[in-house]
Image (cartoon, rainbow, N blue to C red):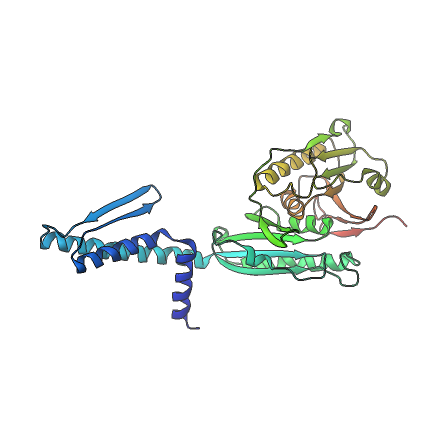
Length: 357
């Protein structure tokens, strides 16, 4: 396809997909021009951001001056609409939407995340797939080190795509199905320096969904923070969102340490579809971690039962420099198995931690 064909097709798609206001100008101008040629009355309303623009024209009693003025208005409307449309299309043509999808659980190929991005998120789609699945055992990561190596390639791929681009022209959309430690690590690698729109996989409809549901107002109940004495170096933190964390299994994995609990009053698998709610929960999580840091805690062992989008979000907001070192653990069956040390608090590279032999 030549450049001219590409321009025409993409411009038409851009205009009609978004129902661009410039189309109203072009349609109004064309209608007025047609009315002039046909010698009939004409009226139109153009919706603008600060109100509607109304105008009308009638050929009855109009002289040459009025007719020429109406013709000038018609051509001006058409030209203005075309210029506006072209300027916005060029702006959108510079934009990139990075659809970052993490696959780390089942060995099946669902609908790609990139296909779920709505037209309201403008820009050329760039699909970035990080596949950590290991077909030896469906649903399980049998070699976490290999999965981490694949995940670490994300930053290099993003740097290659982002190099030389204005941050304002880039949008990141992220979603995934992966074990909790890998999802949290993915969030850390994404970080919060660029705007990220999170999606999650709806297990009933088997489709990617935006987090645009209503905020039910529920927030974490934080318990155990007062029991962490100043100078405590190591704690367990549990986050119970979709399910209740198996606390005895966490203690069996790490040992008897002070436990700080963040738990939603209602735990279920559908309580995460509000982006506003997730942002509020992430703030509570950060505030809790900041308070632990203030009390001298240097190492946190995190046990997380929540939706992938929530895990990704928490990882993306975790402060790499000013919060405690962090290990995140994977729950399988009735026990917590391997975990991952996050590249935070001076840690240069994530590592897998296994239970003591």
